[in-house]
Image (cartoon, rainbow, N blue to C red; front, side, top):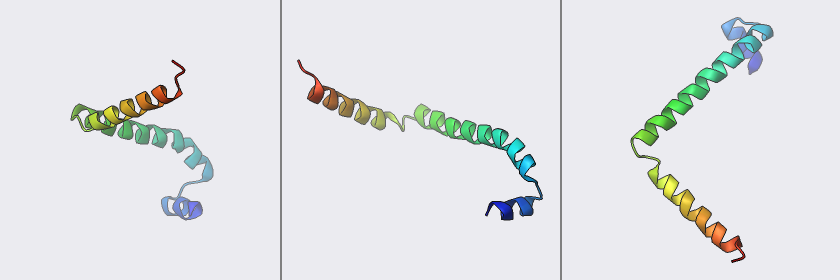
Length: 65
């Protein structure tokens, strides 16, 4: 599959290796932007409540008090 993509885009392994960090940065920035947008719209509020409730239950279960 990699050889097919490299042949399709007419790049060498060295060129692909040089472009990978830039592509990874763009992909990471896009995913981060989606999460920021979802957070600003309040979409992730339920996830935060669920995580907090679950962590509190775990802490209560393992605490020695």
